[in-house]
Image (cartoon, rainbow, N blue to C red; front, side, top):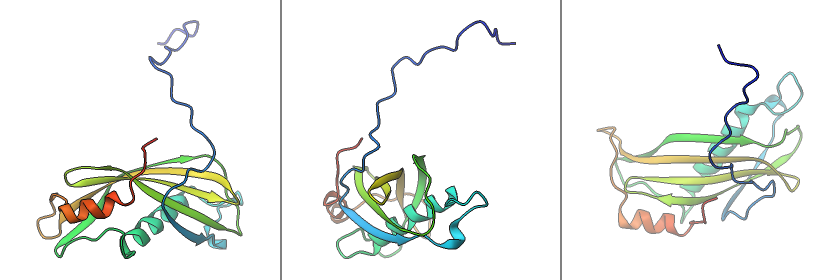
Length: 157
């Protein structure tokens, strides 16, 4: 049993301070909040944040000059982390933006954010992996695909 008089160990290195101000991210979409997105507490349900981020990534991948898979390839989500900074309430239209923070051999990372009325509501980070649709295994990004992603590079936080 833990000793209640003993303090919890302190982290070895402090967590970096995170600004609650929006960052300029190069790809932007607007998404309307829906009445049905509210939960019984009257704010937008946390699961909707993931959907808003997904809509932004899908728009990026459909955008001319965004990212294109070659025939027989698809990009799948490997990780998703969301920092919930503020509540959102209906009605409203949010700005959802993204930038590419890392390009690997067969994967790439997004930094995303949700902004409502000039206030940063949430931050998202995710990794997508390019896979062969038939084999369902990772395939390397082509030089052309890397160049597409490089256009949208940002400094990682």
